[in-house]
Every structure is written in C-alpha cells, then in structure tokens.
Image (cartoon, rainbow, N blue to C red):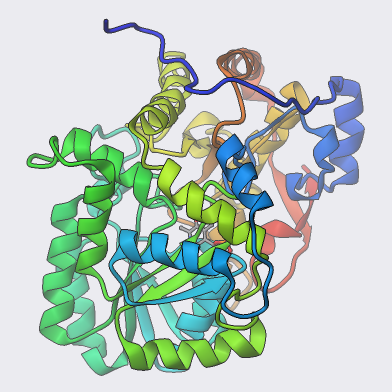
Length: 458
Ligand SMILES: *Cc1c(COP(=O)(O)O)cnc(C)c1O
C-alpha cells in the first residue's frame, strides 16, 4: 500500500526533555551570546538545527554493541570490527581511525599540502579549507555552474566542474596538486548530491594527470539514495553497492562518522596506497593515538561499526531523505527562497533573497539565524559571508558566493510535530521580514571565524 505518510521507522524508548523558553528569555540569551548561536547554551535551544554532526540518536543495537566494547590500547576487538566494516564498505586496504573528520583532514592534507600546493574540490567544507590553508596550501572550489542558481530544479547540483578541473590541473601543473577532493554530498554547496557519472569523469582526469583523488564521504549513504532515485542505471543497485562503486573510483577517503556513521564522535581516513598510509600513520600516532584506536574509545568504534551498516538500511534512508524534503517543500510552498531541490541532510534558505533590504556586508544570513532563534528558539547556522567571507588588502569584505542559512536535521532525533512547529515559526517570521536589520562584526578570530565571532545589531 502506498501510504502518503512516511513514518519514523523507529519507536522511542528513552526521552530527553527540551526546555521551553519564551521570546523574552531568548532576547537576553541571544544578546549574551553576542548574536552568534554557536555561543548559546544548548539548554536554551528548543529545536537544534545547528548541525547534523554528532547529533544522531543511536539505536538500541549501537548501545548494546558499546557494552561489548574492548578498551585495549592495541589490537582491540572493537577496532578489528570497525576496520572490517570500513574495509568492506570502501574496499580500501589501509584504515586509520581518528576522533573526528577534521583530524583525518589535518593528517592527510597536512602531509600532502604545504606552500605551493593546490587542492581542488566541488566545494571544500569549512574545516577542510581551514586545514588546507593552515598548511600553507591553496583550496579552490569549482562547483558546476548550475549550483549558482538556487531554484534551478536539477538532480545533481553538487557536481564538480570537470572542464575547469582539467584547466586548473594544467595551469598549476599536476606535480603541484595536493589532491582533488570530491565532497559527497556537497555540504557547503547546499547538501546537493554528486552523480556517479561526475565521480567517474573526475577519476578519468585524475588518472590522466596522476593526481590524488579523495572522497570527503561524510554523507555517502544519503548521496547513494539520490543516485538510486535519480541516475539511470542505478535503480536496481542497493545503496551500499552504489557507495562501494563510488569508493572504488577514488584513491582514498576522509570521513566524519558524526554524519552518516550515525555516531556522536568518530571519523577515519582510508587509503589504497601503503606509502601514504605509513606516512599518515606516523602523524596519527604522534597526535591522535595508536594506530588501532586513533583517539577513539573502544565503545565509540563499536558504535561506528554498527552505525555504518544501519545507515544503508532502505527504510532509514527513505525516512531520512523524505523527511528533510518534507520541511523544505513546505517552506518552498510558502514562498521562502531556498536551494531546490532539497538536499539530503538540510534545508538551505537563500537569505539574500529573503532579506533583500540587508546588504551582504551586514550579513543577511546571520540576521535570519537570529530571527529564527528569537521567534522560535530554533538554532541554525549561517553559511555565507560570515563563514566564508574574506577581506581584501584595504579591509573591504569579499563576500561568499551565496548567503545561506542551513537548517541541518539531526538523524533520528525529531518527529513530524517538531517539524510542523518549525513551519509555524517561519509563518511568523515571514510577517515582519521587511523590518529586520543586519549585523556588524565586533570581534573575530583569523580562522573559522563563524564559530566565535561576536556581533552587534545595526
Ligand atoms: C563535518 C564535515 C567535516 C569535518 O568533520 P568533523 O567530524 O566535524 O571534524 C568535513 N567535511 C564535511 C563535508 C563535513 O560535513
């Protein structure tokens, strides 16, 4: 029977109360947080859409596995279990555990990077870019042209521009390319999927010039869902088979298991090449931990081993992708400008179009983030000029290509009534939107400024 309602394919066995606040309370909390939701206490948040990272609810199977964990320093049974699951999934020979994605990034891109090196991606995620730039290398984003048109209804707006890829490799010289990084799904590019055809084209070019090709595979299960439903030839493959095929194209991957690993903490680096693995293992042992735990407890590795399998279950993925789309499609029908079609893990609102009265140097995305918190206690994040803006030599802002606000949906955490509430908050925000003003930055750090920047209302 094709029912219209897609139910959460789980029932709830343990509950965590959320504290209900008023707009009066939130006015004070937001001022105290300097208008930066990263500085709010989570107990002052009603619906937390700040990130889908590390915020998943774990299953009873994951908790049970954690009780079985082996906390041995070396050669732990839990490590062997996790290693086997990752080898089976990725097909890569060398697996390095890390405490989260950016640790894997720092090790791999720190080793391959440095001054004079260039990395090329569909879009570098913020920590990826920061780790590359911190090494002295340069990070260049080349999303396909379609990604510049938020409302254009196309199936794979997360793709990389392969013609530009070849031009860049020739211009910089293959010997100066630290790596080509395909982010699936394209998180900063709206959570849009990448097609297998694109992943294959990139492989052909990387092979031709002998440059490293890595997947940033945080959301590869969600991406596999889109390929299965949108790309010809994949409708009869399982989600896991699709992911395996994509892994087989690249030389290695970096994963934050806090996304499609369905865990609260964990990550890994996996590569085909032994020499590269050996070099990275040295760095791993110096900074993260011994090669069979890399900063993770045995129980975290158990949870990851189970999570990496559960995430490919068809009922789970259908609920995951369709429930994110449910929120996005409702907002779309209300006339809220957003990235369309809806991506896998989040709804991205086009704040520049939503608040045309706010210039980009007064951060329309940050203004919407503040409104969502004030009116509804919803925490979201700006993905625009606060996150990716730079300054020219005269101190003038070079804005990001888009001013987005991301509502990232934690996995298996919120129910449909939470989502209905969020939709109502948007109805309220639509009413007074002409009067909303922007913000000014009063204090900011050099790297990843969105985490700790302080703002003032204009
Ligand atoms: C989250 C994320 C990372 C970084 O992982 P952490 O676990 O947060 O360190 C890297 N790339 C992408 C695409 C991500 O979404």
